[in-house]
Length: 279
Image (cartoon, rainbow, N blue to C red; front, side, top):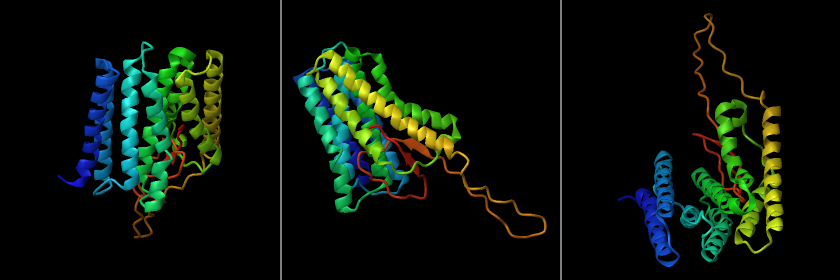
């Protein structure tokens, strides 16, 4: 079996072992098992497809770190789903989430040090970050209120809006404040999930996280709207008086996604994407 296939499959195997360990130690119900396994299978399939499409023969060093972080996110997902009734073991969930957030700064550093920065690795990193924020939003919603789910859902709403509004699929310029807001989401939600502070304080922290995120997304939506007409002109069709053939340039669909705390994106010619990430 080639290394292209063993990387994602190894991640799924480790994910299953982690779920089994959680089931033995702290307990997982059927829903938690299914959620964790479903996350692991989707990650494995998507990563294999990404490697195949980019003709890559293996996972890079930074991608392996991201895969390890993704396995932890799968464990957090299983714990949150299994403890929707408020019985999630915070003594395991909080440290696991903290390690996953800490590793978010490691894979970018490894990619730069080993010169293995890639668009696939950046996208993989972004999706893991975004899903972790969504899961943490679900975890804190019973204590804070259902409105906190907007923190995890804004990124996916941004992507969905890009399917309906072509001008929202434009490329966003780099913005340092976006990275600050992205980093704040995971930290603030982790503090709220730890349940160490009184409820009014945790509600304020969650509200601050949501306000920062709304400002960041709102700024980017406004920028895309303002620059919606600045697009390359379509190539002119050849006239009957000339025999020169002008090929049509295929349009490129740009998928808005969410930026990681550290940039790991390199230019690619097949399918660029917008970096916009809430974690």
